[in-house]
Image (cartoon, rainbow, N blue to C red; front, side, top):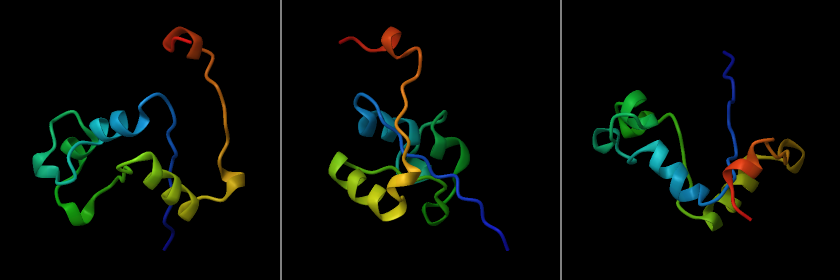
Length: 85
């Protein structure tokens, strides 16, 4: 059996808070429609996505699952149009 890994590390302004909002509540029945869990999950035990609850937790979890060579820093061209200095 082959299982594809499609793990991503997000970065950006308030990324933990924004990411958790996009994911929805941990329990899918409590997640709002339009969130990843609200639209695509049914049970907590079959959760399809994980989001760290703090920057500290994220750094620890990133180090558990990713090798440094797998993390690539890049800047989208539109960044200057989105973020203030």
